[in-house]
Image (cartoon, rainbow, N blue to C red; front, side, top):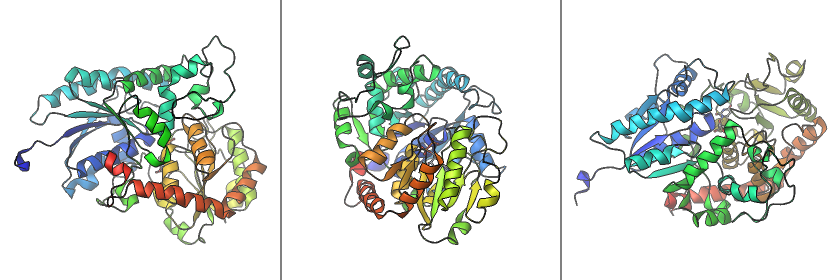
Length: 467
Ligand code: UDP
């Protein structure tokens, strides 16, 4: 058959409207288009507005404007999540979730309907696993649903097996006072895991919140997916992935990075940041190799004022140079100046505090030697790719489980306690320990090699084959 007349596959990629989900989804879309797919990428009006604003321009550019002349076949659709652009989604989280469930899903369905009757109908829906409707919509239109999981396979497996956790009393019902605290040994493909390593939502006693209901529904939909693709690497989670594959086709295709971070084409910038990036390069250029600690708690989680204070005092006491990304809403109160009094003044020779930066660029810089992180999955993968060991301070959701992988399984980081447990002496001691120790660098090279091998094109690595 003449290949030029063959219809291309057309993927509808629907990202979850949070920074840590948008970044891998955008790069997944680019990767699909680079591999011959037509892609229709769906963004919410509010995220589109924010990324455009972050680029400091009034051109209302779409995220893929940078690849416009690359020949990649990417269409961009903006639809409303049902709330006004000015609505504060992080403050009114439950209302936001409810709107994604009812209004956004209806808009997606209308879009699918429109595309299905066009000259170029959709041939698969690739949607974030946290949505609670993709399987229902894809079944309605008779097209495959591919669930995109942006966290490690271990986290997917624990959510997948929530019924087992509940059965054994490790996932509480409201009427049971305490969860069991013994080691969990019955999850297929997970030899053992401590209850304190479960995702924060599964550690909570009351599981009746909106977030819990969304997780439960999302995993009903995920179980009905035709395929699951996951931003991880087969060689790093072999047993878990093998066990998941006994239930449904589950493919590790990560790490999915910006082509510029991986040094592959297209090298044009793709604008995924929700906030304007402060340029740290010049400051970093002036610092000795491996001397700087990078500190960030991601785009979403909050710190208590007390934890922030303890961390700041520990950083100060350690005498290490630092770049600290401090979002204006990092402490969920009305604090105008969340850092301890005098901290900025007294550390100005050693460090800078910025509202947001290009994290991959900072991590890849020679002068960065450690990362004090909340253990968001993208941050973990980016840190490993850059060969930077981690100090782990998980705050929410999968971050506790990711810490287990980083600290216990791969030994490329140090545990710093996590939410509500910061102690300035520990922080200072562990920063010194992390920044000075060669063994972490050796271990991280091994894990990094797994990432490199998985994404190697020649010979084809596991993620390339799975993709
Ligand atoms: N990030 C960034 N600049 C910053 C802080 C974070 O570009 O100043 C990016 C980071 O590179 C990562 C994402 O934001 O890709 C955060 O995702 P992650 O999964 O680490 O955490 P989340 O924000 O979802 O909690």
